[in-house]
Structures are given as C-alpha cells and as structure tokens.
Length: 481
Image 1: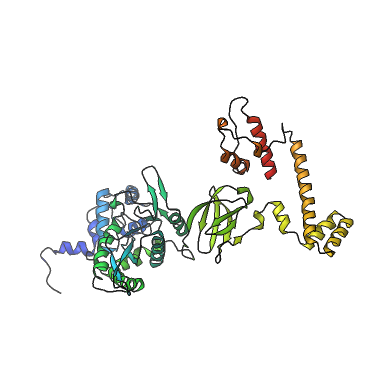
Image 2: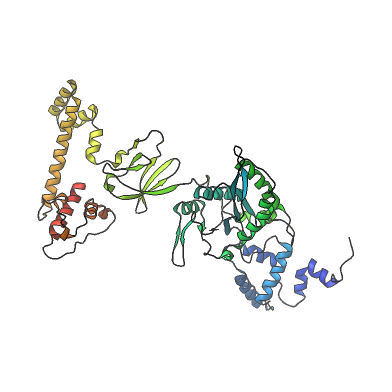
C-alpha cells in the first residue's frame, strides 16, 4: 500500500469508514440509510415522504432532525459509496426506455459483396443502467416488436412503464391533447402488463438513460465492430451480444460494481414475471361483411354472425388466428386458413335459421322431424327416402318449415298493430328532393342499433314520410329476427 495523500486525514478516514458515527457526533438524530434504501424500492415511496417520517420519529424521540436538503445529501453520499444504484430518480423495475441508435452498421451480401445497412435497437433500465442491443435489417413494426420480445427475455422480466420514442411503428399520434398508439404496440404492452408512455416530441430528456446508452453503445458496440466483416444478421448479432456482455460487465468508473451487478443486486427482484409465451405479433385491418355473412381476408372467407351483414368490422390477424371485432367487441374467431385461395371457414352458429335448416337436412333429421309431427308424416318421409328422392324431400321440408315460420311472424306483426304492416324498406323511393341516405337506411334496417342499446329518432317536416319509414324499420327488424 502506498502512502496516504495529504487530504486523507484521520477525520476523512473516519467519515469514509463509519459515516454513521460522524453523523451521530453532530448531535442530530442518525439516519438509517439501509432502511431508506429499502423503502425507496417500493412503489410511490419518495425521499420527501421518508424525510417526513424521519422528522416525526425525531419529534417522538425529542431529537433534532436533519433538514431535507441535508437528508438528501447524506443519502446520496451513502448510496454512491455503498450501493450500486441511487434510487432518487428511478425506482427498480419501474421503467424501460427503448430507441433505435442513430448510428448504423452493416453486413456484407455474399453474392454481390455490397454492404447492407443494419440498424441497432437499444433498451435500457434506467435504475441499474443495464442495456440490451440487437441488430435488425429494418425499423418496421415487425422488427420493433421482435426486438422488444428479445429485450424482455434478456432482462428476465417486464417493467411497469415503457418509454419509446415517437416512431410511427409504435406511436400513431402524440400531442398534449391526444395519445394514439399503434394497435399492435398497445396489444404487446398489454401482453407484458406494462404501460406505454412515449417521450414528448423533441424531448430527449424524457428518456435520458437510453439516449446516453445509445451514445455509449455506438462507441462500445458499433464502433468496436467497424473492422468486422459479417455475412449474415445472425453472425452480426452474435458479435453484438459479445460486445454487449462486455459493456454491461465493464466496471463503473465512479463506484464499485458494473451494470450487470447493479441489476442483479438492485433491480432484478423488482421486475414483473414474464408471461408463459412471448407476444405473438398481430396486424389489424378493416373489412365489410358480405351478404353471405363472410369477411374476405387475403382471398379466404371467414364467417361472422349474420346480424352484422353490411357492417364494417375490425380484423385482427396473427399467424394462427383471425378475429373480428365490432365496436371493440369480439364477434367471431377462426383458425387462420392456409393453402388454395377461396376456402371458407363457417361457424354454424353464425347462420340464419333457414341456412341451418338447409345444411341440417339429413335423412335422420327428416325422420326425427316427421316423427314429431305424427306417424302418417313419418310414413310419407319413409316413402320419399325409399324412392331416393332426397332432394325433393328436403325442398318439401324446407317449404313447410318456412311456411310455418313466416305464418307465425305474420301473426306477430299483425298483433303489433302497426299502422301498415305491409310496408317494407325495399319500397322506399329515394328521390333527390327527399335527401335520403340509402346506405344509412339499409344499415339501420339490419337493427344492429338495437343490439348496441341505441334508439332511433326520425325528424322531418309534416308529410315527409316519417310514419311510413318508421313502420318500415319496425317490420324490417321483425323480419330480421
């Protein structure tokens, strides 16, 4: 051991080795720094709150407390000297900041020898400063989501808050009045149980950790690999991860430990556990329900309940699943079809009753129906089946069923005492002077507004046909049911 410096006096050595003893000698109530450090790891606990509790304890014990400024100064000195992280600004497991590095690197195309630009994704945990980096050939939504999945897997957990930049792949609009996230990015955040809080536009100080890490990683990874010649993205990422491990395990210059040791000691415990499976990326689009109550997606056809015919629905696509939503409510779900174009996936429950009857017309069903009517009807059905005229039988049964259903519907409409039960939407005249929106009227005629809990109010001058239109809507809804 070399000689002590001139400023390393006995008092300095005592303060360095036993700071608590020095504080006690001041006559003020000593601060329990270990307790303060533990409490700061808990949600919503701040130094201001802990200082208030410390003052209450001093009053109870009739001791003199430190002022808030001295309290913070002494804790900062303690944490910088004895702990790997300082828990004043960021709590462990609270935030993950993400961004694309401004600098790029490259791989070499084996066939042409040309350099192909490669982008670097960076994620940082501000509390411990542990970082993750990954090379990607693009900065599109697919690459953005994939890199997030890999970052969560690298850290071994998720944070409470996710702070990205305002890239269109993640944030559709970010203004003081409105925040609209990309639906896929929002869905990924929900999968990992985190909240997306984008940095304000042109405000890099909102995510200083990742901004700082981007600069350091540009030096320690991108610049360090400037002389490397990789021929594939996998090969480049292997080298990036080697440099990343060196970066995270490199000792701090201002205190003991490294980013990795700080993470292990101070932050890993606070991360939320990951879901059993990584997020499966999905895409969203809109489609109109066809008259055959199917939606066309990439030349494949998927059914929805027939009540939504002519409605616009939102479609969520994953590798294995197709889901349809109406007013943010899921109305249909199918396994995704692959193979030749034009295939159908139809759920029987989505069909109207007459369609169900048609597909259910088997000899067994026909006999069951005949037996329910009477023994003579069953004999007639057996006769038709015996003469192999099954199609004719199906038509007869369908005709009988439709007749009975229509007769019942007609009686119910008559009992409703409509002014004119013979009105129908199809008879409405769309003259220019009436200014009627045909598309809107046909949409209302489906009766979906009733399912949504809305009322229909018709306004217009006397004699404009409000009564006829209202009756037509009523009859149309009855027929739809």
